[in-house]
Image 1 (cartoon, helix red, strand yellow):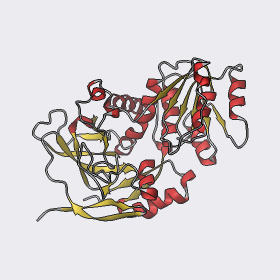
Image 2 (tube, helix red, strand yellow):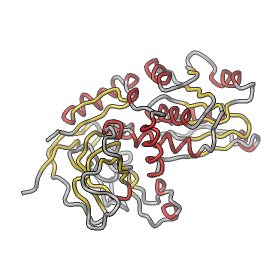
Image 3 (cartoon, one colour):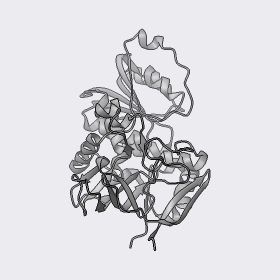
Image 4 (tube, helix red, strand yellow):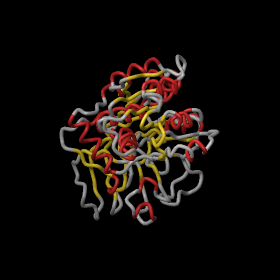
Amino acid sequence: MAQTMKAAVWHGKKDIRVEDVTVPVAPKPDEVQIKVHWCGICGSDLHEYLAGPIFIPTEAHPLTGHSGKTILGHEFSGTVVAVGKDVTNVRVGDLVAPDACQHCGTCITCREGRYNVCEKLAFTGLMADGAFAEYVNVPSNIVYVLPQGFSDEAAALIEPLATGFKAVRLAGTILGETAVVFGAGTIGLGTLMCAKAAGAGKVIVVEMSAARKKLAKECGADVILDPKECDVIAEIKKMTGGSGADVSFECIGNKFTGPLAIDAIRNNGRAVIVGIFEEPSAFNFFSLSATDKKVIGTLAYTLEDFKGVSALLASGAIKTEPMITGKIELADIVGGGFEELVNNKDAHIKILVRPPVK
């Protein structure tokens, strides 16, 4: 008789059920099976709860074949309990923080090492079953092995922190520069800390939530601007001799803040677009062609960014403690997790979920 485990399964909009499901079968030759320690609730998980399916496929996904009801969760840490016969980079007993970008390995971007934008990209927990469960199987080529003794709570935040790390990496050197980060949610705070670690001379954070402004200060923001209280662009120009910031990071995904991130930078500056947008912005492209400003898009990360984040965490250059605003059991994921984020969104950055401990 097949073994069962508890998992949080998405069935539809506002319909996530903690139920008994079959434990994943033995991993395929290129997979590993992981016993989950902690898994964070991501904004994409919340979107699926409130309005899904958004990323969850309604027809068989071209890479994974997955569709329909899905075990959510992709920001996680755990211990490897089984490996496929072809796996050589991971061993049973390893503490790991997998990335979520399941990929084909053969398309042009995969061959360039940019598998985060694979033509058949499949995110764990959306296009394949994820980690709001006791066990999960994932491809071994997206598993980052951590040193023993590494905090398993901090490890669960490597995935979202890696998004900010890659955004800063793509901006090029920011040593001594003035940077603006729009938004102080999970991604914004991670980007802020990575920008400081990369040597930014001044980091300005744009945020309206009182709780998040406080966290931004704790995470190293030099200046915090509230659009309800000032003209953000005018203030940024005042601080930069009238020119604008050297670089900006849009970490909200709002149709108004996208253009603002470009307005905030000087001529020949860089705007890095990190947020996930639900609707288009009105934008005059002459503001680019007339200024040599550069706009850089970025999605997710690769294991290179996981390596960088883990090193910064180990050195204390970035920290996870301010970002963890709740820890709950899997059984309470709907009320204490999703509904808590809906009703008290500004009070939370990251709620971590723990499966049953056996």
